[in-house]
Length: 326
Ligand code: SF4
Image (cartoon, rainbow, N blue to C red):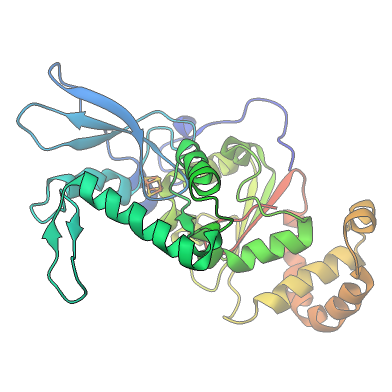
């Protein structure tokens, strides 16, 4: 994907009414005015990999609250999860101390951090001495900052000396990760700056509803349309994201493979395939050609009308439940 030249319009340039939708009601909650006696600590939303910049706001005598920060990914916006993140901190039933169980079946009791950490260390040592170093593993997540992910890697390799380290994406993104590995030889969630979206001529969004799963990111899609780009959404549902699309391909559930074969069939038949890329980076393409010709011909007859409107460069194909760029 290559950005176009020139300065793209930004979300801030949006004309009244453009791109309005529930997601922007979410993302556009106005930050409260800063008070003279407040203290702000810059941090990130802990919930998802967009890592929206936020500040924890401390006002004497009041519960902690959050304010959005002007950060490159979220540009001052957050979704409901981010805006409500601080409400957990003042709940009366929130755990504020470790709880330990001395024997199986006994009730949990409050413990100090030293006691709890000693227990964890003892159990890890015991597990590894019985079953080997790889018997203990660590599990990260997309919500970790780069620094935390780095520290977790160091902890696994240097402290535990285990090769067992993974993250939550292995479950929720496993099909996309496998496809990316097989197609491109590596699995990278987002191999370019999110700002490039606004400078893209054509985006094909497959089965992703980020207006509801990642509202702050949707502002970039609106900017892309303001810049004259086209957004094609493939989704059986008329989602908030599909409603923003230049073209919504509302396929029947279970027909996504036929549709993909149809698009591939058109690309091959109309000479749109990057032959050099195919020759250097793929194998078995003639089999794919035959298969797509057989299964994609019918689907392609319904998709052809969209081809002339979507075939432009630079372009992005964004697939899977939440996000995958290729
Ligand atoms: S999109 Fe929502 S959940 Fe994800 S980091 Fe931003 S505020 Fe948090």
